[in-house]
Image (cartoon, rainbow, N blue to C red; front, top):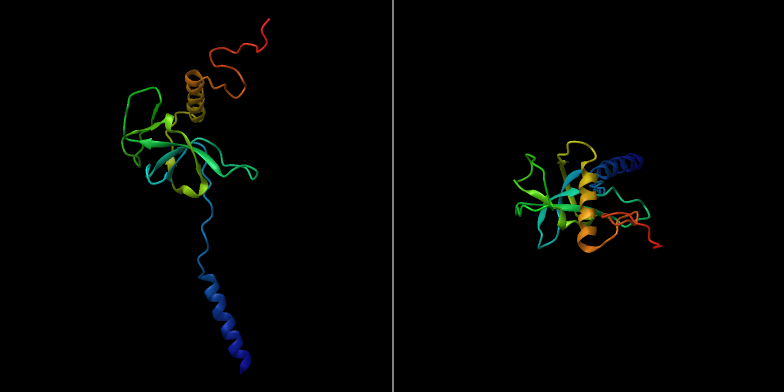
Length: 153
């Protein structure tokens, strides 16, 4: 009789174990996707274009994003992307910022690029504009105005 009660209790606890809600997994955003991201109290929760790949194990858990805005300024730093899930607006390339993975809420969709190289092209244009305006060198150490050797003759 005692064995039957123990088996019944074990069977019930196994059912309750299945009902346990586990923590959600960390999101895995990829380059070129649009995600709803919590940018803090001042910037609110807004759609963002992901510009970097998922970080490796030995890197910081940060991803570069460009927030979507409805304030149009008509300058060279704006990237227009019309999608049904976005309000009329654009991605402002001067607002690029690193965001931790825990702030990504939901994937909204993919960005509207004619070809797969467009996100890279937008990032290269941003790097070029930064280097032209602020004198920051590009990855290969060359100035975008012209790669000259560092030693003068």
